[in-house]
Length: 356
Image (cartoon, rainbow, N blue to C red; front, side, top):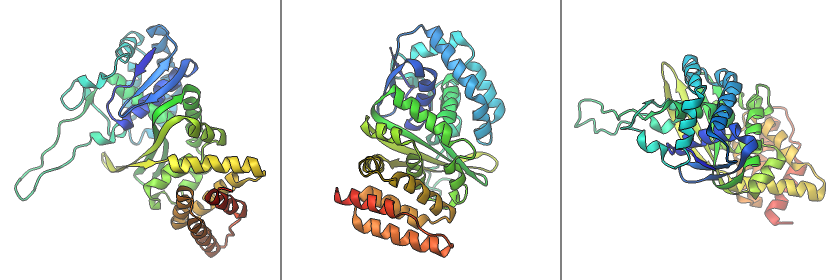
């Protein structure tokens, strides 16, 4: 059986893809990423059985959703929309609709439903495109409307397929989308890693909390990818897919607003990380663990320049960039009374550059 995500946007459908992938994990063969939607190939099961799986997944992860996103989404709305997923009969009819692409065609700016919550679709906000020298008042676009099931599944995807960092009233939400084909098990492993990294006390959460307000958006995508399990990184490289991070900066004062939305290409960094793992196996070294340690150290002193040079060297594989990273990291850590213990990492980066 094939189920297609609704087709609202790359960001929203990525969240819904993670939600459905977790619900059908034990019956998921593969996921195919397209331009603005995904196709999940799953075992052919009765729709009432599938709907109970979705309900069970939401019930399991609703507490995590409330814990992490109650400042961006109203807790009452989270619980209210969650109850919609417990209506097994209506949910089964919704899932039947997803056997054909284009569920979103009946929704949107001029469609039915309730207004999509901004944290579930950053591009659904209102944008002013009026020449104020000619117009005396602001124009606003119509709200983007969707059904309650699309809202609830996108919320579930927030809990399962994102890394979120908060500072002050700002929230940075990062997720990974893909175009191409990925095995169901790999998608499940990616969800597991997101859940682990999102747990309070994980090394990445602790490290990011020190200087989230100073990091360029692309570094959030790179750091999330770097923190994934070694085996998963190799599997992502081996998949027939192209990977992109979607990073959104939300700010809440009285209402939630989008202050930034960026796409970050990950394939170059992904290939280098997987090659570092291969180098470690070949030469019995530990450059990957050194890479994690160096990222932690640089985040501790908020050395944005050194982090950028590190990922530049992974992206370009130029020896000059490796030298620039090592020099910058050494100087910035020394200034804070710390030392750079990265000889194995620098040697491995040099091997990437030379192909040795």
